[in-house]
Image 1 (tube, protein in one colour):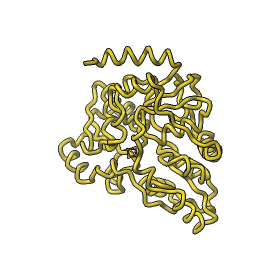
Image 2 (cartoon, protein in one colour):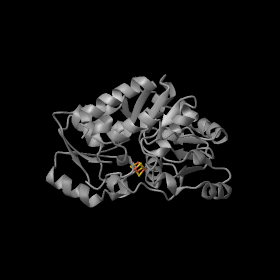
Image 3 (cartoon, helix red, strand yellow):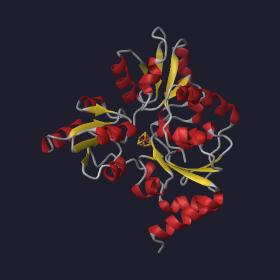
Image 4 (tube, helix red, strand yellow):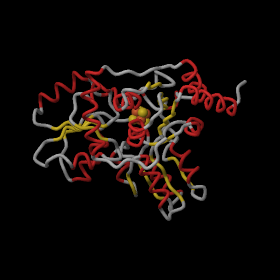
Length: 311
Ligand code: SF4
């Protein structure tokens, strides 16, 4: 049997040999996060992909994130440890459906959450993440209608924040929608001092109960800076790994143990090693799609502040 230490050593050797960097999303398992050079949310990982000098990016996340890295950094080889790690939310909009909707709203600016395929990004005007969605929508002139795709919950939240009507797409994250308002109320009754901090992919009912609503990087920042000692966390449960690690004196309760994304969890330490050994599974995006998608992503990056650390 190979131990975690053995796998970690092999991974370190392979990384040097392949001149690779490992980027991992905040929803990866603790062992994958610990093996990564950089752990972050979608926006932070996009910046890392744009700036790294490594030849190979091994992307531990889901497929649309690796596609985004390829679009932003076309000269790098992008690998994913498991090609089956997709995102059901991203699959809730197809190019045919979007083309139809665009015909219905010819004046609309299409704002596309990065949880979408490259083909969809290529059909949109500007991308956003949960960290910058309000800023991106606010950058669009008030007299232009906005079609916000594909996450309805994030769209509703942004519309409420800006007091602006948005045309919403009926997509949702099945993992975040497993968190119920009842779960939050019960936990709050048990831990009355705890702050409730949730991700905007949660349902409107859950968001209404929160003390703070933020992207994963925003949740990490809120919990780090808050004077509170206890927190109820409404997002994918793997974020608790970083929360515990970075805040040893504080206590975190997952809003629901069911908020466990099976796609994110397909990546394991073994698969990271195999991926660099065999140089699989490479993610490619045809240039005619990548060129258009890149413009939508670059517009977003120009509106956002980059993180300080670059591997
Ligand atoms: Fe997609 Fe939700 Fe899983 Fe994120 S947590 S990858 S949005 S299904």
